[in-house]
Each structure stands twice: as C-alpha cells, then as structure tokens.
Amino acid sequence: MKKTDIIIIGSGIAALQLANQLQEQLNVTIITKKAITNSNSYRAQGGIAAAISTDDDAYDHYQDTIIAGDQHGNATAIYDLVTEGKQFMHDWVKLVPFDTHANGKISLGLEGAHSKARIAHCGGDQTGKYVIHFLLDSLRSSTRVHWIENEMVIDLLQNKSGRCIGVTTKDKNEVSHMYMANHVVLATGGAGELYTNTSNASSVTGDGIALAYRAGAKICDMEFFQFHPTLLYINGKSVGLISEAVRGAGARLINDLGEKIMKEVHPQRDLAPRHIVAHQLFQQVNRGRKIYLDIRQVRDFPAKFPAITKMLQQHGISMKTGKIPVAPGAHFMIGGVLINAWGATSVKGLYAIGEVAASGVHGANRLASNSLLEGLVYGKRLASYIQQLDSSQTMDFTPKKQHRAQLTGIPFSKKQIQQSMMQAVGIIRDHDCLSKQLSWLNKHPNDPFRQIEQCSLSTIQNYFMWIVARLITEAALLRTETRGCHIRADFPNKDNEHWLQKRIIHYQSNDRMEVTYDTPYTIKNHT
Ligand code: SIN
Image (cartoon, rainbow, N blue to C red; front, side):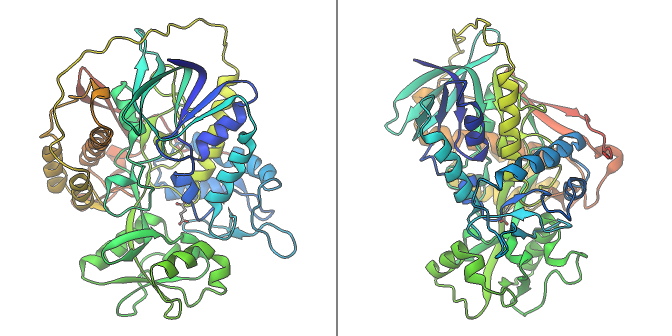
C-alpha cells in the first residue's frame, strides 16, 4: 500500500492544472486508465472561451453562458467561471502558443451561441493537444508528481467515518493495487461511450460517476447530455469531430437536397445553441435526409483546420466537393458528481473537477468552448482550497470493511448499453422509451459487485456504464419538461412553474437509488 498527499484520477486539463498548481507543496499521484494523453481534453479542437479581447466583456460571456444553459445554470458559479477564467487566460496567452494574427494579436474564433468571437485556439484546430503538452511539460521535471498509467480505479476506499482515504486499482494484467491519500480527486471526464455515436475517447465510460455513486456521493443533472451536431459520419458510424469553429468560419449545414437546414430555425442559424442545431439535424435524419457540412465558403480551410483536413483525407473525403457528411453524437456530460464552489463533493476527502463534476456552470446545455475553461478554473480553485487546509490533522487510514456479496454477471454487453441508450435516451426522449429502457436496465440485480476486485476489468467497466446509464435514464424520466439539451417529445415546452432552477440529485443509500431535489440558485445580475 502506497501513501501520498493527493491522488488525482484522470489526466485531462482539470487534472493537470490541479497537479501544476500543487506540485511545489504536495506529493501528487496521477492515476489514469490508459496513456496520459488519452483524454477528451487532448482531443479538443475548438479552444478556450474567455473575454480577453478589448471589445469583449466577461459580463457578455456570462450572459451567453446563462442563455445557452437555458436558465438552469448557477449564476454565481458562472460569474466566477467567466471572471476568473478571463484573468487566468489573460496571463496564459503569454505562455501558451495560442494562434495569433500577422500583427501578433491573438486570433479569436467564433462558436455557437457566443455573441462575440472569444475562442482562443492553438494549431488551428488542435487546442487540446497543445495545452495538454504545455501542462505536461511544466510537470515533467517535478520530483513530487508520480504518474501511474494503464491502471483503472475500481473502488474508492473510505474509513469508518465515511471519509475517502484512497483507491483500489487494477492494472492491465488484472492485478489489484491500493493507494492511500489525504485527498482523492475525480477528474475522469464524461461518459460519451455510453452512446453508439460519440466524439469521446473510447476510455470515457463514466467511471468517476460510478465510483462516486458507489461511495454515496450525490450525483446531479444527469438528464442533460449534450449532443454535438457535427461528428464526421462515414458508413453509418461517427469517426471524429468536426469542430463548431468550422461553422464559425462560415460552413453551413445542408441536406442532400441542398437545402440550408438552419435558415429559418433560429436567428443565429448554424451557430444557434448546440441542442437546437442537433435537434434539427435529428429531425432531418428521421425524415430520411442525409446531412452535410458545406465548407465551400470557408477560406483557407486546410490552414485553419489542419487536423480536420488530415482526418478527412484519412477517410477519403474529397475536399473538392466541399461537402462533409455529418451526424450528431454524444459529446459532453453536463451532469455529474455534485460539487461546491471549490470542487468538494458530498463525501469528505473526495473532490471532483472538470466534466465529471456538476459545478452548475453549464446549466442545461454547455456553451461551446467553456469546458476547457472550466477545467482550468476549477483545477486552480481546488488547489487553492486544498492549500489552505490544516495538514497537521491526523487521519484514520483504516479502510472500512465492506459488506461482501456474491458476484453475478452483467446480463448485457457494452454494445447493447450503447445501442439502447442511443435509441431510448438520445437527443429526443419520451416517457415510453425511457421507462422501457429503465426496466431493461433494472433487470440487473442492484449493486452485486461489492467484491469488485474479483471481477475482470471489462466486467467492471460494463458495470460502471450500467450505473451511469441508470442515472441518466432515471433523471431523464423525472424531468417532465424540455430544457436545454434534455428534449422530451411528450413535454415539448419549458415548465418554469415546476422546474426552473430545480436540480435532480441521485445518491445511493442502503443499496437503493434515492432521489432528492434542490433549488439552490437564483439568476442574479452581477455588475
Ligand atoms: C468543437 O470544437 O466544436 C467542440 C468544442 C466544445 O465542445 O466546446
């Protein structure tokens, strides 16, 4: 058993930012399921939204975030995100190789639902790769940062008072390990792999949610899962993301009849909030139409989007036709482990930052390019919270003995979970398909894997996906309105009387999934 100050699970932008902020004072262990660069952050194309231009204002960024989030966001958290994010990016653009114009001024892109061009980007469409390498470079020489790759955290260890005191992992040879720490941080990303069509890395299976849920943490807003309108779609499969920045640079969505899909739908047309665009595309597909992104109006496409150009070439898509086949797919999990303003969860000693966390900044639908910003801001916030804690306190590091149950198998495969979620809990939901999906999921006995280290990694991963699928489906069934990216065919309107600012929170107690509701926010105008 090894002991460290802080364990960070995951290696995306939030994880590396936190490690960077703490590396001088604390011993940090970063545990990641695959290689360090295998994360959604690394794949991020668009960039980082921040009001750093002289003609922009954090208040405008705040308003855009509130509106995109369909009035469900936490106004205070959003205000902190855009103001602290602006401050951080103001300094960071001097250090990180963000793209600039010939005159040296930072080049800022436009994306959906933003009132101003405020997306800082690197390498054209390779922002994630550049910022992750920048953060990794600043960690490489640290003697206090210890890396563990290709190990999956399968359980959180808690002492008798319920405090999280460490983790159990399994390496790729299925050997178990135990690590103890004063603080354990989930930075595991989202759960796009629960769906057949996704932009996410294949390792992104909702592990952090399942770990936290099993430990008794509160899980919130799971009905809000954002679908990105434009995944490259080849032979009935999504094979990569076509950034919204491409539409920001002038591309338009058309169908196979050549009709402009977003023309009459929304004043912002192709740059309307993502759920509106994804909904329109879904309806086109239902009518049997094929969808394309028409890039003929985008000047210097290969120079602006080199990674996308390479991906198109790899898939044999000719740039000459100017038509890229696209379809919507699961992109970003808005809900997650409920946290406070600093990243603390409802379980002592356990924190969550980045996509795995429900911080309230995304409301019911995330504004484009606010996710890397969230990782940077909450990584820094949590570091400052941990730095001011009293480290002289003695802690009980004896893991509480778990009640042991017999193991049973998962009666369905990863593929079956993905297909059923795509069909029943995808872009459009209704009561019938959600309740059918829930009874299918509930065929599985409740939480049979307390002897989890005896299961294979693939069984554990399926089990975690099953937990997250249940949480999403339960929450989607409960929210009887349409808000943000949660679109109910049987409740097509917003119901402010019953649902405004109301959050659905699930937690496990005595092996049962319990639900509670919370309305902690008021939409405030900050001046
Ligand atoms: C994109 O580049 O379209 C994705 C950016 C984001 O999800 O914020």
